[in-house]
Structure formats: C-alpha cells, structure tokens
Image (cartoon, rainbow, N blue to C red; front, side):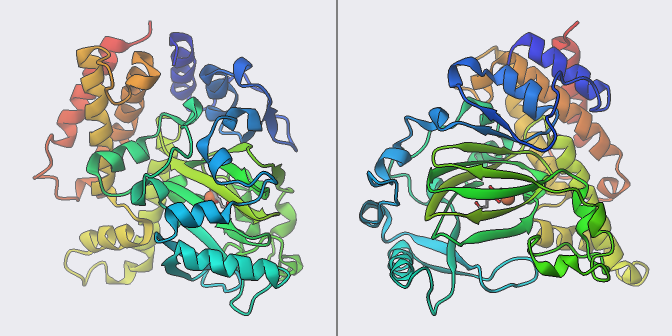
Length: 419
Ligand SMILES: O=C(O)CCC(=O)C(=O)O
Ligand SMILES: [Fe+2]
C-alpha cells in the first residue's frame, strides 16, 4: 500500500465510510478488469475494497497458476486421473444439493476417490444419479495436503487477517476448494463473519447472483426468514414474501474458466455451476471490512440474547451462556474476537517497531499497510472495549488487558499518522 492510498483510505473511514472512494459504480453490471499490468493494488483499494463493490478479474490474472495446468485436461475439463493420483485418499466434505436442511445442505465426508467415482457415474448417467446431486464443498486443501503448487495468492487479496490468525494458531484456515458437476449449486447466503471472498475457476464456469448489502431484507418471508433459493417460484407468492417487489434484480455474473471474482463484504449471493467446475475460494477479513465483522458479531449476540431472553433473570451466568451459544452458532464470540484483534495488532506493532523486517507478518504490503491496519484495529477495539457485553466478559486473564492494547495502538497511530 502506498502512502497516498493509505491517506485516502483513512480519510474515507474518518468520514464514517461515506467519503469519496473515487469510484463510480456502474449499476447493473459488475466491473471487468482485463489487464494485470495496468491494475495496481491501489486501484483495487479505490475502486472495489473501499466502496465494497464486486469485480471480475480476467483469466490473465491466473495464467501461471499450477492448478490451471495440472488439474485440467487439454479440453478444459477436470483432470480426474491427476486428482486421483495426488489426492485420491484425502477425505473431503460433500454436500447434497438436492436436500434442504434449514438454509443449507447436509454434508457427509468421503475419500476424494469415492467422490470422483460418483462424479464420473453422474456424467455417464446424463447428469443424474440415484445418489442425488453431490457437491464437494469447503475442502481445506492447503490445511490437509500441501502436495502441489496450485495457486498464487493475488496481491489484491494478500491482506488476509483471518488466515493469518488461523495460521498463527496453526489450527484451521478459510482456504477452500469447491468441485462439482454441472448443476451443483450453493444456496443463498452471505459469507462467514461478513468476510470478503475471492473465487477462481480452475476449470468450468459459475453463475453468480449477487445482492448488495441490505437487499436481502426485502427477500425475507413473512416470518422473517431468508430464502434458500432466490430463483424459486415460491418467491412470487406475495403473501409469503410480502416485500419481494422491493428487491432490485441481483447483479448477475458468469464467471468463466480462469476468471477471478471479488465478492464484497455482506453481499448475499447464490452460485450455480454451469459446467463441471473446480474453484478455489478464500474468505478473508482485513482493515477494510473489520468494522462489518464487528457489526455482524454484535447482531449475532443480540439475536442470541433475544432467543434466550426469557431466562435472563432466572439463569445464573446468562451473559456467559449467550457468549457460549454465540460461539457455537457463529463460530466466534467476543472473547475470541478480542484474541483475533490482539494477534493481528501485535504482529503489526512488531512490524512498525522493528521497521520492515524481512518476512514479517504484514511486511508484504509495506509499512503503510501496517500503519493502516493498526489504525483500523484501534478504532474497532475502542468500540469493543466500550461495549457493555464485552465489559461483562471475564477479561482478568487476558494479556495484555484490552485497554492496555488499545493504548499501545493509539500511541502507534499517533507516531505513524499521515499529516
Ligand atoms: O462456488 C460456490 O458454490 C460458492 C462460493 C461462495 O459462496 C463464495 O466463494 O463465497
Ligand atoms: Fe459465499
């Protein structure tokens, strides 16, 4: 990140996120970026990260990727033989697209070998099988097997605190492979923690239906639930979906083989594989959408509090229970969010304190990025520390204490301020 981009981004956030990101979104269609040589990280910040708008990068951006060479046959189809040879024994999660379980699909686990056997049978059966329509989803390729050089993280997505955090803890990651025959699909959803995602088709094509944040409110049914399938004729029933006519049409994108899609924070979407498709999809959070994540976590806690509100006075440790339930439903609670902020903050403070040590976390995008990150964490942490439900969390064992960390961040912000 250069100094000018950092100054622009900081001005934007100082203005409450409504400043001038110097971009004019073209309503009705998603921007297409043809040329890597003429599109910088600064262009991405201005045009897409700050205004939180989607874009498609041409296949030129992924030209050299190992996966596009190794996983695909000369006719552009998944190379089953190669995948079997290298990953046949790996156990992968598989969803059944034909069965609705709440707003998702039931999942089972099987060796990739068995999934590929199913996939070949599905094709031979004219894209049909008595086993239903199975979709390999959320395979943690990097975590579970690091055999090959499949992709190169594009610089645009390299400020990725979620994966940096999980890598530091060596527990998990949000780096996935999706693979499935034509007709497999992902139901309507927004991504975990309101993260960004990026998606590259190694082979095949996907159709995306993208709804700007807030539009989903008009898609709720009369009980307040979001739809499972936005293309379902059920949504035409005005009695069931009373606000449906207030929802504008989605932005529709056909993502071709090799193309890379940026899905902004909090945009609901539904995705259909138009061919036999393999994709790489990552979820990521950074200074640009950290406040969205924090906002989402507050909403999640409020929902839990409403759900078990009737026991507020009778249940000992009611607030603690809310945090426990929140963690099991949303994957994170206030304590863990603090831990996440702390890990990233300390890494950035180290970078700023030591100068740009070679290979340090956050060093890739330069000192301006580290300073920007510290500013964003400082702002969100100030809001966390003031939150009454965070004040009810037992922080006595936290090190450093939240106020102490906030103080350190504020000092660093003072030192690195762009004048
Ligand atoms: O490709 C899919 O089926 C879903 C991908 C997705 O939802 C995402 O990358 O956020
Ligand atoms: Fe998604």
